[in-house]
Length: 458
Image 1 (cartoon, one colour):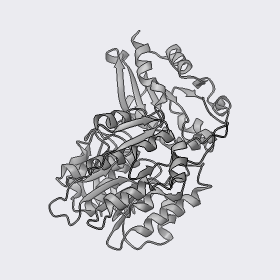
Image 2 (cartoon, rainbow, N blue to C red; image 1 turned 180 degrees about the vertical axis):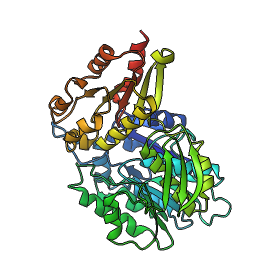
Image 3 (cartoon, rainbow, N blue to C red; image 1 turned 90 degrees about the vertical axis):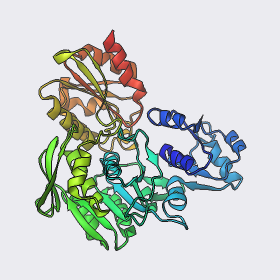
Image 4 (cartoon, rainbow, N blue to C red; image 1 turned 180 degrees about the horizontal axis):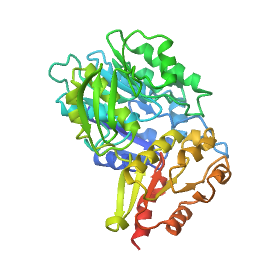
């Protein structure tokens, strides 16, 4: 919603927004754009006399314990019959597919890696002079902003627009996945696992939503899918009416990587095309790169040029972002910030850091904050996802399950604390010179990164 607000502002609209507890980097971006952010959802905001209210999926008809509405502004909008729409629908109607212009939408879907892959593809197109528009669920370091409109580039019949395509539902009044609104011509299906247990019963229901996305891709479009994922094979087998390109580790994949994630060659249809050299870790990012290279090829970027572009890719804020280093040399203690919250993402993030730091100690500090993790739908996977860390410290506030019991198989390598201060205290009791402290959450985590750095300086 913050990125959408930036796009609306760039398109010439006066924009205000409201939310609760907004945290960096989005709060910083909104402030720099001069977009007024109102704390809370009070009905008094109707005095702004907005022409249209764009509703995010955090909003609901929920009631508090005292019976009062949790979102009084929404109740007032409904009561007075004022115009409203969802964020994805507004994007479609006002930016992506207007009566005057339809953009070539490039949508990146998947349980993991959407933000990073979207940023990779956008950077490839930008560095090749195609000036794409984009909407990314994070702040890519190569751009410093999460969204912009872009321009019609030379040799393109439509302006390019790269968008992170989320399978989560659209709004309380529209339970379709967000991505069905975008109508892409290029669609990446990066991976597919069970997630969002608060709205999906099983993986089959998510596969059905992914197939709804496939149905919206035109015959002249292209679907880039991960051949290693059985779930995506099932999606494609339900019906596909567009050209397909596969990527992955399978020898049957049309786009493949050869070598370590930090330096690898890329082949396309059996021919070596170019080499990627970068400071990004993890096989998952290698797969993200293949998806981005294949998608760029669909709009005319040669794989060898895409490889060269990725060699200057700087990743996204909160994706293995180094927040600070205390000390020098081999005794330095490094604090990282990462968005990982699904068990598979946690495991791949730790694995990537392990390959980078070798035998140095990793302290994994995480909070299960997503709706799925709070419900405990995948709690049994946590010991597996955290096993490569030397010590795990879990922030257990607001969980519906016993974190100590779940992490008990890890023995002394796992600790639990129910406040941020207690988490920091446990880190300080355990930290040693040369450690790598990896903080993982899909929220602000109570500003723990700076608090840890402050504590380590003392």
